[in-house]
Image 1 (cartoon, rainbow over the protein chains, first blue to last red):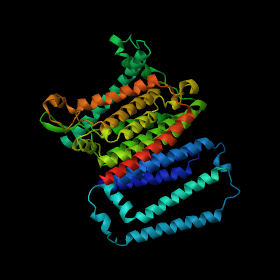
Image 2 (cartoon, rainbow over the protein chains, first blue to last red; image 1 turned 30 degrees about the vertical axis):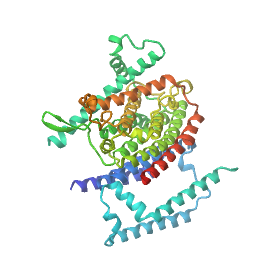
Image 3 (cartoon, rainbow over the protein chains, first blue to last red; image 1 turned 90 degrees about the horizontal axis):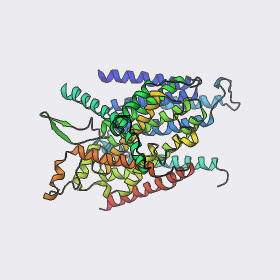
Image 4 (cartoon, helix red, strand yellow; image 1 turned 60 degrees about the vertical axis):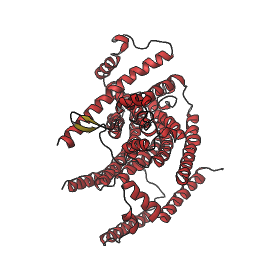
Length: 168
Length: 341
């Protein structure tokens, strides 16, 4: 009962803050609502018993990445109100295609999660708390996808440096 | 009921009041220590040797007029001091001041709670406090506070990476993220972890100085160049909240350094049971803890009185080109030693 109340209250907060993120006119306010959104998601993880994930969510997203957003927003200092700003290179069709792809992905995840779960031997056999289980899942069961993801991030980082810096 | 509600509430009440009183007296101690370093007397007028000065300061700050600049963003301007002070106070929940003690026939633990991700909780909650500084400077709608808050965000992000990397190597040695378990691990290892991880301790302390905006890393509040820093437009109690948070964060950094590296509530030579050292065991654990924490707080003040401020490019170079590579090297060496032994 208490869990259900917590879940629905947090869901309302998460969705409400998400709507505020995209509907607020002031960019800094919008970033702040994003922080609140992330904190509520962290609280949701706590109700699911995933304390490690909750703390990492706060540390990485709320405490790290969004601070960088805020930094950039302040440096750029958008003087123009957003409604007068119409990007001439705006690609509506691409936007719709991408949104459709994301929707399809979400539907696929929903269908997949409705199926009965296939038991994975590794994670269940690990004793101990949250941290050990996440570590086992990342570095034993899913080592290759994990390394591929980190390689992808490295490529993106090098690409950003190359694009930003004309002469190396 | 008594164990689940009343005792935790009492602990929280005592802890919050204790922290706030400690913070006000830290301000007095800072003024006194810096005065002694500069061969002055410091505050002497209010009470004998100025010991009532914090009370006078608090009354002054509370009765001062609370001003919000006309062009400021009101909501964010009001929220910023709250965002700074709340994380600074709630991290105290997982700091173990001592082991379990018998009090009035009950066994009471001298910490509010012990969660199995305690250390990460401290790091992540502390990282939220940055927002207060950034937003306070931005919402003032004034150029010096904005410059200060941009400096603050760059500084805190850079040093947070170094500090977190450093703590990973300590976690590898301790084998746990729970603050209580880390102290127990030091008891089992028969040695304080500072002797196993001296590099990590030095890096953590330098990073701690930078994360609390203390000298020599106090660029966000460099008075001479920024007319005060991110809090220039604040007055009265809202101004005071920024300082309460800064001093509370100093206590957190000192207490975490004590817990992780200097044995927490353990006495010196925690496992040697010989007669000449028996008197060390008579002192209760929480006194050891507070004494060690006090030493680090004193070092904070000592450093401020001694070292000049870094230039901005020096600060960034130190963070990215010295501390982070050293932290990574320390982690790699620790990993190798741990695997080979």
